[in-house]
Structures are given as structure tokens and as C-alpha cells.
Image (cartoon, rainbow, N blue to C red; front, top):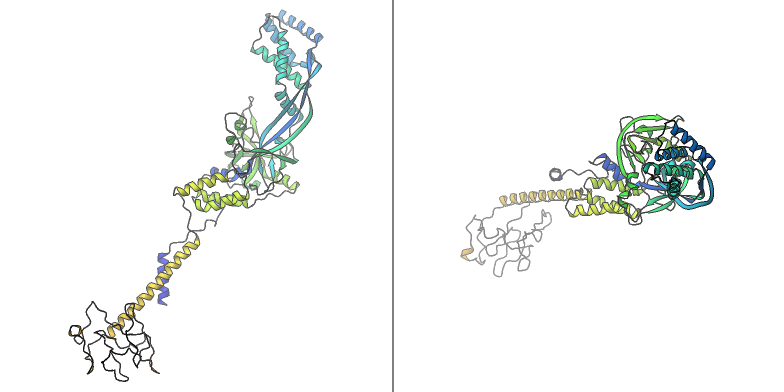
Length: 576
């Protein structure tokens, strides 16, 4: 039909192109830097972990082994006589302390009383959720410490007071000699070594925890350590430095997806997420700052293999103490490994150009040994979709998804801030959310309906125009005896009524079938909106009866029922 075709054309012109649905590619990265996108998506699953050892530290009182010390004094006299050291007392004292520090067990002996102190040592690392119900991956050296390293930590933490006291006593034996800074350091080193070698640890207990925020979300002072259980642990670097933790009572946790070793190669950019100790171990930053992971990036330099056959990735992505156990990502947001180690200079500073990453293939192998399958829930899916909307400035579209995440996981550390930011952006008129598809359909339907109405009206008006041209009225003298209209209302034959009046009168033209006789073409004409109903009853032929005193029309004759100069045109039986 012509109307349908015209309407289709009108709709095509009036209806704008429908926007692509926001969820057509929900994981496609918005137009933001890769690091920004990665940090926002992965930070909720990256957590600060801690391991703690508590116990009783016991050390004996020390005393000088007098025979050995007397022999040492004789050696000192001979050395002075040979001119190898100066003869002043300060030089001789330094030489004696250096010899004792080099072999403390020869010149010092244990005695009573035993001294004890309660101590606690530990460290901070990084871990990340791999299942929504609380399984976490971190490094082996983040959950356990070897005996030698543990003794060193306890000695450093608990023995400082004893070491200082013992050093003062040995220095006091140097009669008449004022000890300088070098002599004090040498004296303390003697007892650091002796007390560490003779220290005993009793009632040793270990605990592991993950630092989580409380209900309401946010990484702030409400965060608290949540106990974690050690499920499995490998060998510390350079072995398969992997550990699996389990935090009970968890659900709907945010997670990060695992990739494959083949996802990255030399030259690709790697991204490390974690908690650097230069922030967590300093008093200058707030707790809120300490509980937000940092993201660093750098190129994949080479694939290495240890002497025991364990593969590692060398990267220039910076890492620091505390980053251990943190996930390492490809640009696509998948875990391709775990940060384990970095080279450290003599003064303990990390070298930013040499970090070593345990490949994800080893992580999958270790998870498979415990039948743990990485997974993600609606929490992660909706959060990622909401982030994509947020970064595209689709703030209205992002809000319900963020709220769904908040309902699924009230402890989410970042969603509350995104909800607030989205609301502020909407209030500021920055929302660019596309109109829903249904709205575009309704707009299109409205355009189609309007086009159909316009086409129908155009057709009706064309038909009326044809009727008017074919039924131009002429004035007919009323039959004898009819009441004459006033002279000022009579029209000359063939002249149309003046513009101020309707051409057709107020008779009931079209209110009933005109001449509805059997066999007659039964078209029904209806009055226009300005035609009033007649003021008198029907006549015998279905027309209004003429006023009193006016002659009835002859039977079967088509009649113009004139009333005060307005007349009814004859019916047009021509098919339209």
C-alpha cells in the first residue's frame, strides 16, 4: 500500500540509528589507560596479608671467659710491640672488641640468671582471592619462615634491650676510656651475635590473617585482620614459592581470573599489584593509604629457570618488600603470574630492574593438587560491567549495577565510593547513558503512527476536494407555497455562499443513509464537526421535515432541503 510505504519512509527518516546496547561487549576496555582500567578491576580482590609469630624469648646472662680473654690481651701486647696497632688505649680497645666479635663463643660464656621476654614478630605480604568462598593465593615465604630467619627476626625484635645492657657492661670495664661511636657499635655487635646464638624460643605460635574492611565497605580504619588457615605451602624461592590460604565464612568475594603462560612473552608489558612495605611499614601514611594496593608496570624481559628446574619470569616492573605474593597481570586483566622476589642491594634497597615472577602455570598446578577451581560470581561480573559504564560516563547505567554489588558483598572496599561519584556526576549533568532500546522503539512507533495519521488525513482531504468540485451547488427556486427566505439571505443561482457561512447546512446530512432504498448504493455520509443536529423531526424519506408551511418534496425526487439559505447537496454515490 502507498500509505504503508510512505510511513516506512517517514520512519526511516525520522528515527535515528539505535545505539548499540551497553552490554554487547561488557568486557571491552573503555577509552581509559590500561593501568587505570586494570587497577579498578583488580584491586578489590588484592588483599594485605600478615603472618605473626608469638613466643617467649629466653637468653642466658653472659660472662667473660677469663683464660681466653687473658690470652687475647697477650696477643694485643705483642701486636702493639710489632707496630701493627697504635699503643694508645683506644686503638687497643677497638682491636680487642673486633677479635671478640669475630669469635664470641671463645671469649664469652653462658651463666645465670636466664632472662626472658614475650615477643612477637611478623611480616606483611600480598594475597589475592581465587574463589568467591575464600581461597587465597600468596607466596610460601609469606606464610612461613625458616628457623635461621625466624631466630634473626626474634633477636632483632626482642633482644635489643638486652644487647644494649650487655654492651654497656663490657664498655664499663675499659677504665678511664671514653667510648666513641665505633666502640659502642663493636660492643653491641658482640652481644647481638652472642644473644642470638644462645637464644631459645618457647611456646611458639603462628597465625595468619587477611586484612579486610568491615560491613559498609571502604579501605579505612574499620579494617581488621581476619584469621586464615594454611591449606598448602610449597618451597620458598628459588623453589615453587606458592601458598594457599582459606578464610572461612566468606561468600561473593571479588576475584581475578587466571590466564595462561602463553598469554605473555618477551616485550609485553606486565602489571604488578601489591602492598609495598615502603608504605605499610612507615608511620607517615594513613591507614587508608596503607590498605590500598599499588600498581606498577614494566616489560617482560626474559624467561628464566632455576637450577632445580623452576621457571620464573624476569621483569622490569618495579617491586618492593611487601609486594611478595601479589598478582601479576597481562594487559587483558588476567593473572599471568605472582611476584615472588627481587634483587636487593647491600643496604637492603630493592632493585627496580630485576623482579621475578612465578608463572601462572605453576599456580594452576598447585591449585589442581588441592582440587581448587578458580571462579567468579555475579559480584565480579556486575562490578566489571559497572566500571565499564562508569568509565564511559554512563553513570545512570552504572548505578544499579554498583548497588547490586554492594548488596551481594557489603564489605566491598570500593563500591560505595563509586556510587557516590556516579551520583555526583549525574547531579552535575555529566551523565551520557544511552537511552534504553525500548525508548527508541516507542519513539519509532510514535513516528510511524504519526506518519500513518498524516497519510490518512491527506487522502481524506483529497477525496473531499474531489466531491466539492463535482457537486458545486446552484440556487433553485423553492416550490410554490414554500416560505421564502429573507431577501438578504437569497443567493443568485450558481453563486456559492459567502465565506462567513458553511456551504452545507445544519440539516441532518449524513446522519441517516441518504435514500436507503433497496438496491440503492448505501453510502453513509456523516456531518463535519461544525454541523449541528436538526431542530425538527424526520421526514418520510429519511430527510428532516421542512418547517411548517413548506411543501413536502415529491416522492422519489432528490431534494435540497433548504433552511434559511443553507442547503444539503445531493449525495455523491460515486465510489471513492
